[in-house]
Length: 385
Image (cartoon, rainbow, N blue to C red; front, side):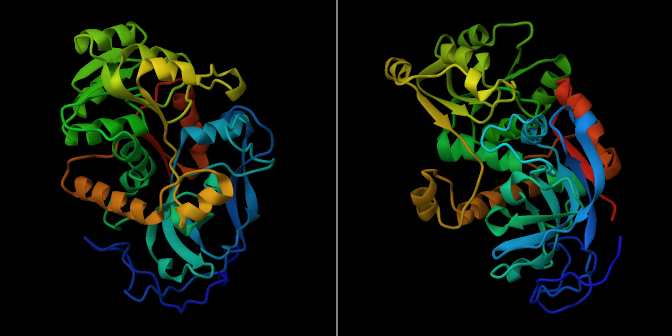
């Protein structure tokens, strides 16, 4: 890999320094930074869809260039997201990535270069999502500023990489969309995963009763450590029947469903009057065309709310809705949520759950546990530049 000077930034130059305790990334207040031109980088690419261990190939590709309102991040760590797995298999729910492509939708790192309008990000340590939710399995990634948040430099790399997506999505589902109130009952599916483990802690901090489902005693033990009140092994019990017994027939006020398929259908059997079923994802792997439709009629007779929850931020939500018909929250609302999450973390009210941590060269190895449903918490890949 050759080094000279990273282009496409108007910002002045100074050198890196390490972060001290309490410092946000350890950079000078004027955010100037000396950068090096790196024309190529190592990246994991997919040239054909399939199992990660078979189709992920490490190679040298060009370093991307940030466009206006984008940043170039020197990746410190990658958090594996279940959406990455869908993309690698070619079953992505929205836009199937064209081949070849670099997967990866969650990265932690330092901003080394910026496009026009993003100069204030230069030099900061950030957690972010690459452009299009792809491109993170690499030494550098281009990311939109609307999906970018500061991460204090004193937080351990694996924890810092774990705090963004799952806690933002869980908070969006529980509070912004789900309007969870103290004393209500929350049922959290796939509770030992990244989003589930975050949701347990946030719901308990909000004064809710938390019932969880998971597929092993080991996973349920983790959920109990995080504060879950009632534990259900979905492999040995009918979770809907169990929830109805635990709530004396009332059902759960809010259900977080990131699994889909039969779990969604069975969740309706234990959803309270005026309950909210929050759809966060489809980890069951069922293809979109094979999903059973929930038509308006059951919604009418069920007296419950079905709520989609999508994690994405935009600079101008109104203009974005006019163009796409989609409602995404503003980046400023995400900043407020992010600050609250960091405050809870600093007070030790929540913690990041890191289940496995590997080096960049061993990245495909993390998928064995993910695909076999034995992983817990986040799977983190740490880079050593």
